Length: 363
Image (cartoon, rainbow, N blue to C red; front, side, top):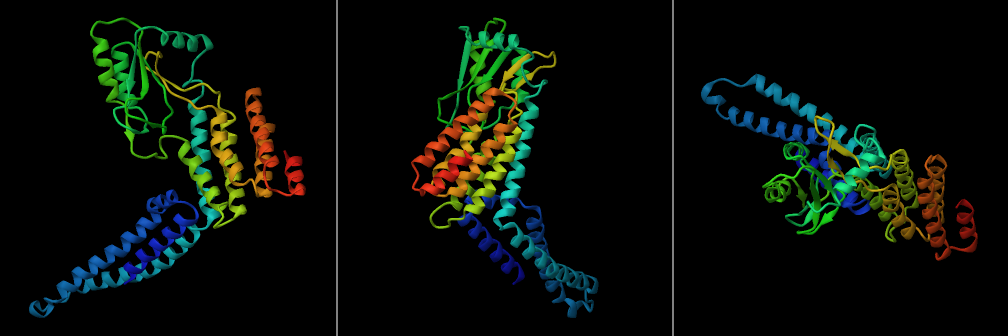
């Protein structure tokens, strides 16, 4: 009975979360370690008690009652009853919008920080001359373009296998598309250039490198920042939908999106590279610019929140804070373009003149 109750509570909680915050959030409940432990404890208690109950049926014939097993079953039942209280508290805490938005924001910030660190000196071009040499290499006629073998979302490249093959044949590969991007079968996702002409290499380059490209049926959080950005944006869009209208949750999402975009301000802007043991570049990865993530995060909220002055004002404030901390001129120009787009959204909105003036002053 307790196990059935727990599973029912879990399904009800996941249904509410899927309706109000988005179906992608449901995966967080299934991956939550305390939830897995609680469900496992309840099932283990039920199975152990069932096994002991069967053994008790033979007690009259044998004249022996499994007292230790009965005591252990009783202890597990008491532990399970205490665990169900902790489980209810855990579910009640996790289905709160602020709690989930905070977790998503922390994951976005951590992933953005990791991306910035990977774009540091060790994983980037050593100089502009080195980057120019790579660009010239891929303008030659000996470049092999590798298409996707099926349609789906581009996953990370098998770097270890690719690095060994590229180093063995003195090749350089360049990823043409962003990880997590949807590709159609036959779309070129990789280019391979030969630094030294070798006979017979052209025939096996396409076949060998195509096997190292992974295409998945869905996006995963481990592949790209888009997953974290889309998760936060989806929560905000559902909060602004006519059936819910919760601008405060949308504002919390904007705050968390701002923390991740703040980390990306420090990104050098160059795509990361992978070098072999001799320090030579073998793989040039694809890198989306800063304005891509800004647009991905904030433009949908501008359109969905065009009739909510507090949401548009929060977006303006967030962009203003990012622009004030941006050390690079190109970053400030990209943020200014978004502020211009926000201003146009306000002008075409149905807000009253006073609210338009308030948001305009904030911009």
